[in-house]
Image (cartoon, rainbow, N blue to C red):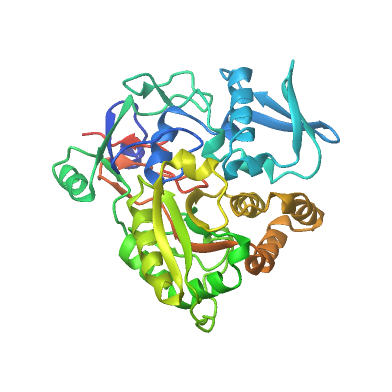
Length: 406
């Protein structure tokens, strides 16, 4: 009779302890609109929470949605998150497509709709909508006892940055219990961090044919992206039901004469984007393109509309929803005018997710965007880290794990 009782007690979650986390990155950018790399998104999740966990969504009347903040959540924080996304120059403003306006009410925020939304219930789980309170708070990132989901088991989380080799050494020395962003074997977790190339429509059809015929996505992933990562042959990644089969390679087009000057703009702080830009420069040169590399700040990459001779590398975190992910990609490709019709077509279908996947295949040859690669969140955990789970975006849920008794 005593044996099973002891076994159950040994596996029970316990409160307490500090989790040292090492992020494999040069620096942390934990701003909600720019936390679209695995390490930045994890850092943001420590002190912020997506709106889908902070509000209750309801439809009190046709054409109206209500966001009711949960206990401990400020209506102003919710409104600020919506305003931040709606006024952003980047692709995530597409997540509020179909929302005409909102205003405060006694029950929270009343959203007036102008048409079908980009699957707003799941879109609100995107980090761009993150707000306070988070599971941890303060300069010492201590457990928040009033968090709407409940107090985390851990007392605190510490974040440090390092390169892959230093992170491995800290983990081996037991100075880090969790490493995020180091190369790890592929698993079943979603891979929703994507890298795409946006190009001017005027350069089609020669430029996309030149890229598809010479750029090997497998090589890009093998040489430049740490696993878990994979080639991205379609608009939607396989984690959202997109195809994993590579498209047939088109015939190599004849070189342009005279040569055309183009620029590739990319985030100067991303080694991955810089390496891919250099590979594109090498591959396009024999086909009549003189390519200049243009490193820029992440804000400039998002805010500046591309010129007629400018290609833009963008790294994005797609929402865990095919309709919302398709909306973000269309916005990134400069196809905002297509969104109302696309979302109406999806909303009218009996299975919206399936229809979004079909439209992604149909739209791929029509939009000036070349999908390149997708990446997941590589996580290495020590033995004493228990109940390590992930959310719909593949991010580790630090608020739900606990440390085993010593």
